[in-house]
Length: 236
Image (cartoon, rainbow, N blue to C red; front, top):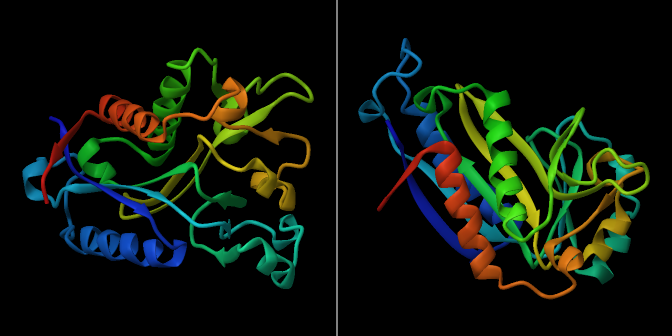
């Protein structure tokens, strides 16, 4: 059975404002799950999931197990760059969000989809891998690291095109992925992305040498998420 999901494209919005917005949806979905619910019970008994697409103004976010030492600037130095900094409750280390980057926040009930967290992250990666491949670029996974990479096993050339960091409670997810499309990659120079010091970052624009149609890429990501998770889009 397909998983029913409400799709929300909220444009460009402040990180903290969006965090609060998705946390509210997340809380309602978690609280709607009755004690003793059987994993995989009919989707008719659950609230639908939500998929949020957003662009953030310049911001650095740190995962709950990450190190602040991976932010190479102090808070005063961030001000001239119009960037903010937040400690979050997601997994992963530090990353950057900014204009030209597709940030996706799936708030899904994995009990209904009948998958665990490891498979969930695998499918997020798969949707982005398929999207990147549509542009003639071979993307894949890195052993021991989440996200989507190009040349992951080539020393000195491994570069991440999509970061992933999630939180789950009662098998309901929040936070998600950040896919570099037309992103200003110079902002990554101020951090050790995802805690790595020996690997780079990239974007579709950098790999292809030309600015990409952002809405077209967004539609491809949405389509591939629909396929890998078997989603059924519904209206709110």
